[in-house]
Image (cartoon, rainbow, N blue to C red):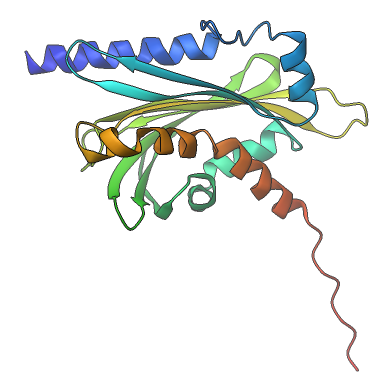
Length: 224
């Protein structure tokens, strides 16, 4: 029964990820944004669509989907997502991020996250997808349940799709989706919306990180 319940939850979580990736939400459609939403995206705003899903067995997933234009190529973003050390900058309240192994092209990231009130450790399995439509890249991730984990479940992906720009400079539409079930307890009861906000701030942190990488190095001062 436990295996059947877990399998059902996994299937439901995957269905939720699929729905938000396809925009099957009353708030947005990834394949048909409204003119206002498209204009906001072009101005550099992130489009954020929160999602919540509850199962019959008590699982509660929170998170959402975001769309953001990043001034970088899809290959540059892919290199960042392949750099385990970068996740300390990309994921809020991350104290440690280390590579915990590989399985074929998949790799595992062990994360320690939290603040003075709450701290948890878990491992994500990340699967790079060689190529997606439009010459983009995709990285899917989910909780590695075989490793110690202080959360119940987590799923998501980063999808990088090249877009045209007026200047010819590389730009990428980043679609980021993530849901997490922290399990019953004080975090769910008191900090759920704060956690959701942190999760959906990842594109902002990524753009800031990319901007820092693009800053020219200060010219060496001449010797006196």
